[in-house]
Image (cartoon, rainbow over all chains, first blue to last red; front, side, top):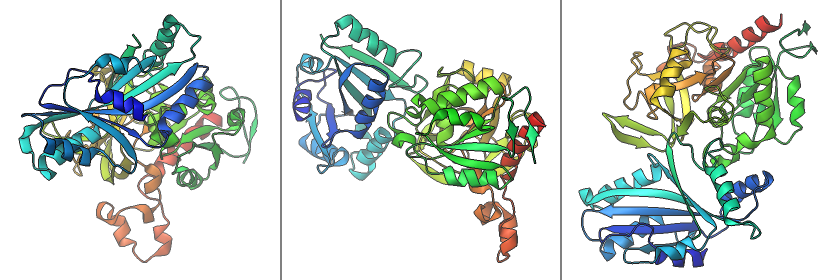
Length: 183
Length: 290
């Protein structure tokens, strides 16, 4: 996972601007949520070989991101005892991240409690006030499949998981998903 | 007492009305819920998710307790849906009309399974993370454990668990959840309303259905706290009636009867505000089976 995060560091997903900061975070230990989900999916005969969970935060400020902001955001979002992380605000190569997994599912919750708390903490506890515009959080499920599968089959499996009727990774009533495949 | 079950259930002899309280890994209210059913003279059994699910067919009803099934991984209730246990319960409730009561995490499982509002595995509703609002602005997120008020908005006898509640009745009840915000499209809300499937709504202590926090503690759409399926035999309810089933469980500040009973042990063991919830289920089964 450290390699994944190193690549994330130079792989902005959305062309980060000078007033934006991205933080990527994952657990040092194997993620128990990913393990549970993988075993459920394997039990349902999905030919998954890897399922990783990453959390991605995009913090938008009203002014340029300074080193102080980066330090405070890390202090807020990252516990060094349990997380490995990387942060980013500069140019990158989005394709590097795209090549890591067969498919990636991005899930965003309409009102994410952690993102809401992060906005409040940055505004009032760290004292940045209204300079903090927003904090968005996405969960990224990185999936790799049996190498014997071709691209069409992978797409079919992932669409089954994300779309109707399973909506496995996100409930469409309050979560948004997008899927990216290896290019 | 021996009852012969005829058309609606499989033909078997029943000694007592029995409820299976399903225990998933991470459930933590199963024994309270089982005791609540026992308090109205029913048999209840905590049924572990790993048992042969075919054994579930001998029960007259099912209850999904509160807690954190599968540690709420992915999202609350979404993993338990893929257990064979839930498939059997769905089949039994559909085929024989057996009652299914989902409390808190059980509510989340039933929503994720699509058993409420009606269609198996069709996600018309989502149980989103709490987001209490005041004048449209989010003022409270995260886990909430508190006493709130709910008003009974269902018609008299609309569901198996509300037979003994009056229309418009206002009652205090504890809640304890982090993902209890009902979210759905306006069309689904309209359909629920038209079919009378909205059983309980969060309200102020005066019974006003106020969309603002703290009356609506989790920001639920239309203040919804509990719903049923079209048939009325599957109930999804976020608050905890099993935690207000005896007088000693009630909070003095919301239930004056408890204050009056202080120091009198026998009275403390008398029914709390929500005993009727469980009595309703029992009454329903008697009516169906006699």
